[in-house]
Amino acid sequence: MGSTLNPINSSIIATALVPIAHAFDISIGRTTILVAALYVASAIAQPTMGKLAARFGARRVFLTGILLVLAGGIIGSIATNLMTLTVARVIIGVGTSAGYPSAMLLIRARADQAGMNAPGSVLGNLTLAAQITAALGLPLGGLLVGAAGWQVTFAINIPLALTTLAMAWRWIPKDTPGGTPRRLQAVASDVDPAGLLLFGGAFSALLVFLMGLQHPNWITLSVAPVLFAALIGWERQATTPLIDVRMLVANRPLGFTYLRTVVSMFGAYCLMYGLTQWLQEGKGLSAIVTGIVMLPISAVAVVVSRPVSRRNLIRLPLIASSVIALGVGFALRWTNIYTPLVPITIIMIAFGFSFALAALGNQAALYAQAPVNQIGTAAGLLRTFTYTGAILSSSLISLTYAHGVTTAGLHTIANLLVATSLVGAVLAVADRRLPHRIPSGT
Image (cartoon, rainbow, N blue to C red; front, side):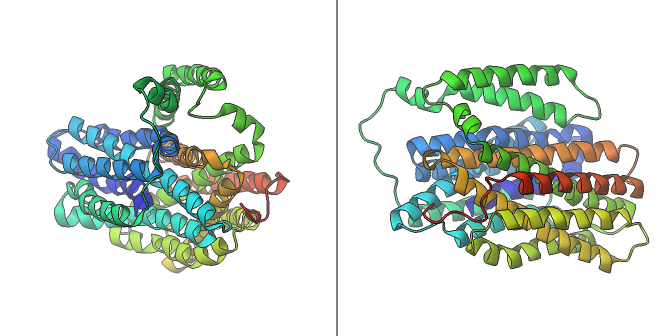
C-alpha cells in the first residue's frame, strides 16, 4: 500500500491540470508546476527517507511518511490557490517517498531475522503494486476528475493514507529501541544536512533544466555540475554521508543498475505517455478507450511478476526486456492513424512484458548488490533514477509534440525506444558481474 502512493500521485494529477487551470483562472502552463513539484520532491526525498529509515527505524519513518501524505491530501483538497496546491504536492512527494525505501529495509530485516534467502515473491509484489498504480493513474484520474472534480486527485490520499496507517500500525513490528537519547548535533550528523542540501540543489537544477527543454534554462544546467561536484567532495569526507560515494565507486555493478534504470524507464515512459497522447489527439480515441488500450500493461505485470520474482531472476529478465522493447519500437514505427486497435493492443501487451521485466530485474539486482546496511538509501536512489528517466522522457515528448501530436512524432518516440533498448541490451549483456539470479544467502 505504501509503495503505491508515490506512483499513483505521479500520474493521477495529469488529468486534473486543465480543470485546476480553469478553477483558478490561470494558464495550463502554470499548473505544470504541480507535476514538477512532486517529481523534484520525490527525487530528493527517496534516498533521504532511506537514510532516515536506516538511522531511526523503518517503521517510524514509514508511519511519519504516511502522516505527511494524509496532511498533503487534506491541504490539497481544500486549497484555494496554486501556491497551496504546490505545497500540498511537495508534502505528498516527501511523504510518499518513505514507502519504497522503508519497505525494502523492512523486507531485508525480516528475511535476515527468519534466516531465509531473498523473498522473491515479496519483492515481486512490491514491484507489481507500483507498476499497476503507475499505469492505472491516468485512466483512474480521468474517471475521478470527471465524476467529482479536480479536488479528488488530492482527497484520494486521505482514505489511502488512513488505511495504510492502520495496517502498518497493526502489522509492522516496532523498531528496535535506539539506545540512549542523542543530542541534536548527533542527530543532525546522522542526517547529513549539508549532503542533503547539496543533493537537493544539484538534482533540482538538473530536473528543472530537463523539464524545460523547450525553452532551455542554461543557468540551471551550469549550476547542476558545480553542485554535483561539491556533493561528491563533501560526501567523500562526511562521517555519515547521505550518499556513500566511495561505495558507489567501488560497487560498479550497482552503478550499472542505476544506469540501466534510467535508460529503461526513459524508454518506457516515452512510450507510455507519448502513445497515450497520440491515441487521444492523433488517432482521436476517447480517454476511456485510451485507458482500456493501456490496461494490458498492468494486466501483464500481474501475470509476469510472480513466476519471475519467485525465482529471483536478474540477468534473463533484463535481456528479455530489452529485446521485447526493441520489437515494440520497430512495431510502432509502422503504426499510423489507420492501424486497427487490435494490433495496437498486442503491442501494448508486449510492452507490458518489457516494462515488468525491467523493473523486476533491476530491483532484484539492487537487492543483491546493495550493502545490507545501505539498502534503504540504495533503494531510494533507485526511485530517484526512475524519476530522472521519467522526467527526461516527458521533456523529450514535449519537444517531439511541440507543433502538434502527429504520427511522425510517434515514430520519433519509437526510434527513441529502439535506441534505449539497444543500450539496455548492451548494458545487460556486457556486465559480466551481473548475476543470473539473487545469490543464495543474500
